[in-house]
Length: 222
Image 1 (cartoon, rainbow, N blue to C red):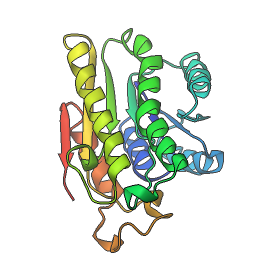
Image 2 (image 1 turned 90 degrees about the horizontal axis):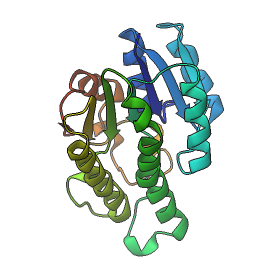
Image 3 (image 1 turned 30 degrees about the vertical axis):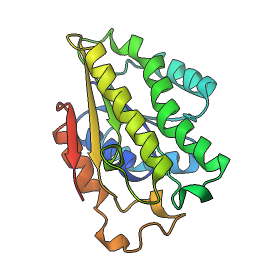
């Protein structure tokens, strides 16, 4: 069976994608910083497949990425990488702290870049492999009170499109998913979304992404 590795797989869209892959006969590896959330997600996934691994990995830390990926591929080959881990801080640009800015750039941009850089040599050894970068519609247009978050997502978009060109003709397929806000813990620490009832169910978004994963660009508007 093929194996998928999903960053930020303990909650939200990452967990919903993990459940879909598990239901479709994939071995599943979920990574994240919170081992409690990873353990809870793993328990859910074990209802659908016996082949589930949870690995602590902080995408802001290159050493952590290297260690986690080395651990994983020593046990199982990886066929699909889903770069889902992400963070956002919202509000007027002038109010953003150095911490907020660094967290978004280090997680959303550098985390995706370093995870891809570490795993692509392995993926290219597989008969067919896929990278799915979860980007958001913030990577398509500017938004009020989302300046640096949008900047990080535009960077992810440019990185994804460049990888598509660089690996065109290889066994590696690369996709970018652009979706609107979802009802996930992502919004728990902010009041940026005033009416959360309009947010999409992440399970529905996950299903559309999974079904369209062979497209280069997957746009799911709110």
